[in-house]
Image 1 (cartoon, rainbow, N blue to C red):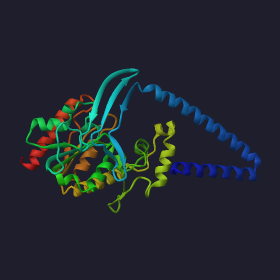
Image 2 (cartoon, helix red, strand yellow):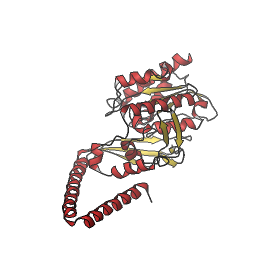
Image 3 (cartoon, one colour):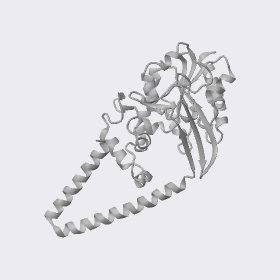
Image 4 (tube, rainbow, N blue to C red):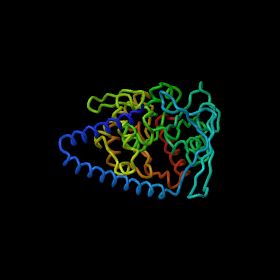
Length: 342
């Protein structure tokens, strides 16, 4: 039985016990409180219905993926499937606006060049949709732009669409990526705050099967768990249960304060840097509805070495994806040449 069902049953039994207790104590009080409960539930369902219809009608753009690029994995949550392919169709209302095809090579990377696992590469580029190249032809992705700018630099696109900070930490824990790359770049957006804190929004987008890192900000400890249900099951189950409500999703729940979130983010970032033997560089980027505050970025930068970060927040992925890839490629290449003298 799923944890959210167990929690729902606990709430149901508690509600029944309270009402039975009230009925036995005073039928007069029970009657009025019960009527109030019914009215409250009725109002809640009315609001839920209205919000659900507004939500379903407001989104005129939809994305359809025909096929799958990833499979569920116990350690990484999801991993790329070698030699897989998927068609991505974007609809505006009922009309097709554009179509893309994404194909992964024999190692599960998006590339139009052959790679050898026994060969050492200069750059390993990690990240989510911006680095993977969602909505871009393969030749327009960041990695391909780097190789065209300087063919002497060997770069691998090791990003995938949902490679948030939890997944990236799990990759670093595998002790594989940095052994094959002189320098690693991970493109990090503000959503990393929600991922590393396993927030209400994150759980309802990714579920409880994503990799989970239990971080104690006071002791600066970080412990790898198999998934969010290990050592965090009650909060995760409650988030999944409450996340089924349109109203609660609109209001949002925040389990952690902002300072606590940033403390945990810094612990996670320093953990990844240490795992990479200092070769990791975090590339800060902005998302459409979630942008870094310059004051927050300044605080983060003050806690890590200049060689371990690169600020690309001034480049807008959503305005022009191809331009974003080109400018980020230039910034990464300059940073790599600065720190490798190649």
